[in-house]
Length: 108
Image 1: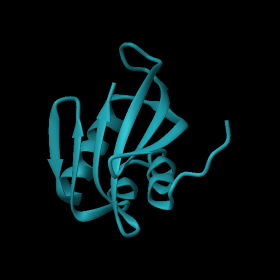
Image 2: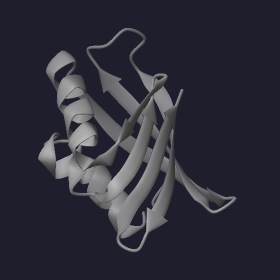
Image 3: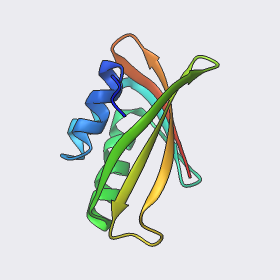
Image 4: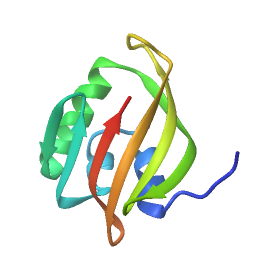
């Protein structure tokens, strides 16, 4: 399946290969991320979250579906790595603000 992701979301998945600051730059200054029962507010917290994940696990994330619902862009991605339960299909619920991500919730 071939599809185009909105630029901020495409940048997020591209930056996930570099982790840390590259990911944080995809977000607004006061963005929020929810992942695995935790909430991270602001770019500094988002960068720390991503760096902690990258330190624990090596993984790839390959988006394969995209839909819009209730003002959110939902991307489904196959995540494969050295974590328990790999591979998994995760759903990423993005809210955009201009050319940045304002919020992201990641759900199994």
